[in-house]
Length: 305
Image 1: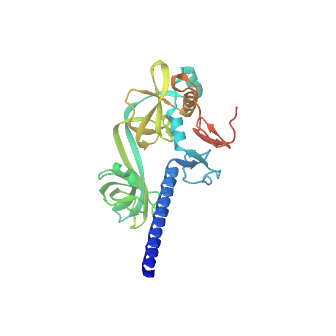
Image 2: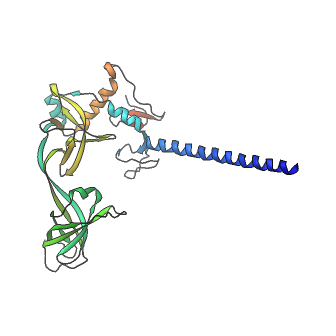
Image 3: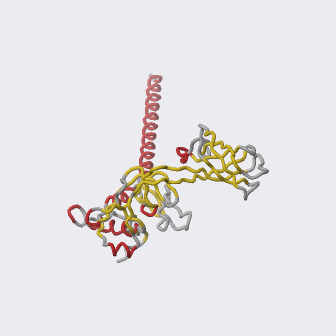
């Protein structure tokens, strides 16, 4: 009889331990999911340097100001509320905004590279993974060797490796030196650029692009000389120009210059005018912060009138 009771007690204890472990694991898993959702739905940024995005509180690595938290739904709400802006030619001239036509052109890319000389006639250098789709055999390169810093080395790419270095995220490229100074020595360092021409690309000035929290956009002139925001997908960046993958067609007119002024006005109007012209509310911020329309985020302190 005592033996039966002992078996029953042992069974109850085992079942109890299993149930407790299952509950704790499930609770821990739920907490991990919540934590992941919170991290993915917000980030920390600097009021003076909004390009800084961190997943935790701290200081700005540039100016050491205290980072503030921005919720992605707040940014998305602000980004979606952009009204068209009506501006006369005189007003645009006053703020320095110009009308620029989207056109096709040949874009000259200069991809920076660094490596070492294999011999007096060949060189090996590294190309970042993000630039790999531009690089191919036959493209010209130029640069200098540390051994002869004032002598220019020119040549062509002969081969591109097929394995990316997992640490540096670069790939090795071999080039044949066609012209260079005398006395080049193997294993000395090399630095230079690979020249790439993107022919007949749809291109816009760099000053026409606004980088926002949800993508890149430009302001397009519509009927009645109004300016409307439009999202674009960008490709290669050259000196002063961006390649446009989608979102614009040649012949369209866009604004170029201090577009942040137009964007601020568009967001102010979009925030103050809801559907049907009704007043809409701004996103909620913590007690010690206020919603700043031009910055499209919660900022420290009270709003100034």
